[in-house]
Image 1: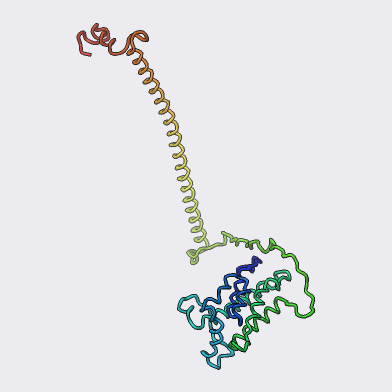
Image 2 (image 1 turned 60 degrees about the vertical axis):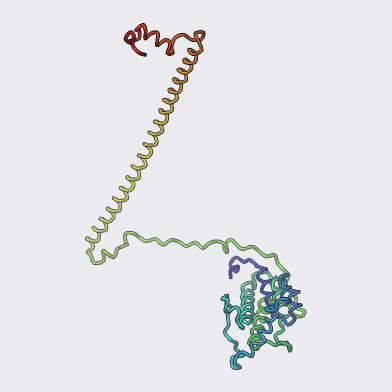
Length: 304
C-alpha cells in the first residue's frame, strides 16, 4: 500500500515473503537453500523454525471438528506473550498469504507484463508448500486458503500454461506528472458583507449595521495604533543607533588626539633627559631654575 501510488517496486519485501513461505515447505532444507535470501539457509539449524510446519499441521488436533473448514480467527501479534503461543506459526503463515494476496493485487497490471518474473520466487515458494502431502498434511482451512491465493496469483499475473503465447516485455514507464502532482484545491471565498455574527442575531437591521461599523472602527483603530507603535519603536531604535555611531566616531577621534599628545610629550621628555645636545629647556630642571627666579608666577623661594 505504501508503494502503490508511487508505482515503486520493493524486491526486498517480495523476497522476504517468499523466504518466509519456505519455512512451511515440505522439504525445509532444500527450500531454504533455494531461498532468495541467503540468511534463511541457516534456518534448518534452528529448532523453533524447523518445527513451523509441524506446528501448523498439528493445529488440526486443537480445534473443534465443526470449525475445521472455516478455520480459527487468528492474527499476527507483536506482543511477547502471544509470539510464544502455539498459534503463532499459523498466524505467520496466514499473514504471509494475505500479504502475498495484497501485493499481487497492488502490482497487477502495473509492471508492463513483467509480473511473472517479479513474483517468480513467491510462485515457487507456493509450489513447495505441498499442502496435501501425505507425510504432513495441512488442515483443510489452511489448504483452502493456499488454494485461493494460488488461484488469485495465477489469475492476476497471467501465468502462461501450455502453448499460449506471451506478450513481449515492455520498458517500464516512470510515473506521470499528473500522478505525482499534489491535488490543488480552490480556496473558499466568503463575502464579508453577508457575514453576520451571532451577537447581532436578535437586533434590528439598523442596530446591527451600527454595531458592525463600530466593530470595524475599533479594529481599524487598533490596527493603526499598532502600526504607529511599531513605527515609533523603529524610528527610536534607528535614532539611537545613529547617535551611538556618531558618539563612537567622536570618541575614537578624541582618543587618537590624546594618544598623539601623550606620545609627543613623552618624546620631548626623553630628548631633554638625554642632554642639551638634542633639546634645551623643559623638564623639571628648567622649572626649578625659573621657580628660583620667580619668573613663572611663583613666589621667590617658594617650594616646587
